[in-house]
Length: 247
Image 1 (tube, rainbow, N blue to C red):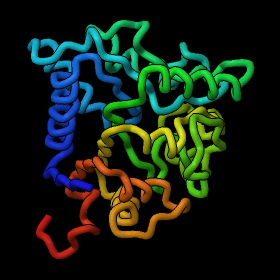
Image 2: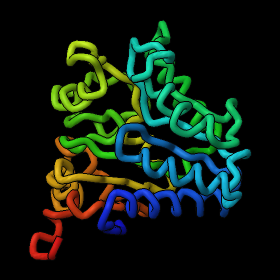
Image 3: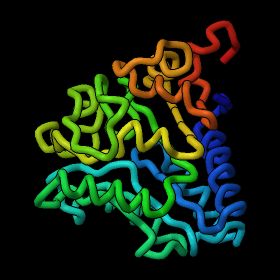
Image 4: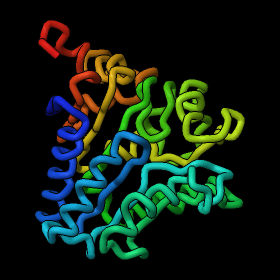
């Protein structure tokens, strides 16, 4: 596991964008796994700049999103479908047919999970998977105690996750309680992992991810076993890793 610390959110975002850009340059038809939330927004903005400056071409790239809420229309501004199109896809030259996001409105969620997992396999797996991390150590929507062997599946969201995500909704009651998520097994089969963390609220989760024992209670701890994982951590999120260092 490689750990890169950044002094600011902006520095973290630029370093992350550089890694994604390099992946696309080295393999123009690569498969990217992408994440949502506040943390990767800066990375997407940097990648858009790189595209506009003709530093990177997404025309042959395939993208799979980590997760999507259930029972939330794609037209909702809080859906991850909306998030990805609004914040990234519509600003670059990725082909719509090459962008994949789970359908949380599917009538048969189990079948949708199987379909999504099969599409990833048909593409040969994910070359680079970008991850955020929850305050409880979740990656994707894989909450504590989730089976490490799980592939794409339906998850019940943890109370901590619902509370954390309520800031995006009008009220806590509006936050979906279930989601479709790539499983830990799917994530770990990616050839490269890139985890981003920003802010003091993530410091405990980062410490447990790096220094703690590998256990389902801290889903992100499994990253310790990945052969090619990079973490880019803003200094406040890294403060427990280096408690004696000047911040």
